[in-house]
Image (cartoon, rainbow, N blue to C red; front, side, top):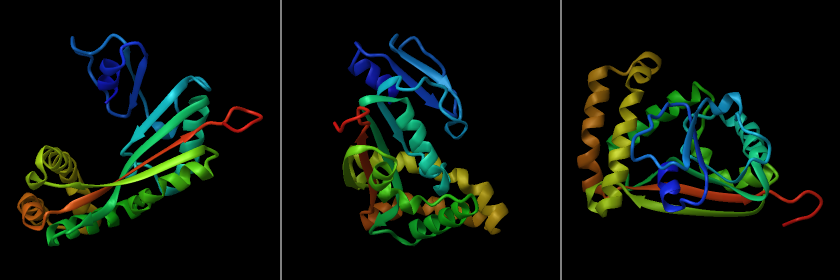
Amino acid sequence: WGCEMAMAYPQIQVIGFDLEKTIRTPSTPHSYHFQHGNLLDGLPFATQQFSYVHQRFLGAAIPLNRWPWVLDELRRVTSPSGWTDLVEGGTTFHHAGPATKQIVAWWDAISASRRIDASQMSRIGQFLKQGGFSSVQTKTEILPVGGWGGRLGRLLAQDILAGWPSMRPLAHSLLQVPHEQFDSVIGQLATEWERYHTNYEVYFACGQVEIQGRGV
């Protein structure tokens, strides 16, 4: 995403930050830079360094009680009159079949063991307001999952199927789910999404940092 932003807006400097390291390639824009680190250890950036801060899909990684602290960090590095933008997926699927419901149940149980509650991601707009942001705007999109939904549906299905198998070791060790059962449920998802025309809720919220001493 950071590379795409840098290509779309070559006049700005874009800094990516993630727990997983990325490798610079010949096609990486010169205006894009990457910083490796863990958000939960704090952001290694100066106060008020960025006019726009974007965070996405960390609802499955941030314990619910750490969200106020995370938003304090995001607000700290955002300049006065700048914007912080959040994109999150929760646990809400529409027209979900039995395999999808089973995976979500395992996901909820694993998350609870880490004090994570992705079902609360629909409240990210409230999180921003409670974190001191102003002019908060929110939007919920209901996206198709699977080839029945065209290119968007195929991409979302591909993304989910790339991520959910990573739960396999924890489903086995924490929930005693046999590996064969887990793999069987994962294997049913793609066909099930086509049969049920499954949709997934994704949440968007942005808020502005006030200029000290007056509103914006």
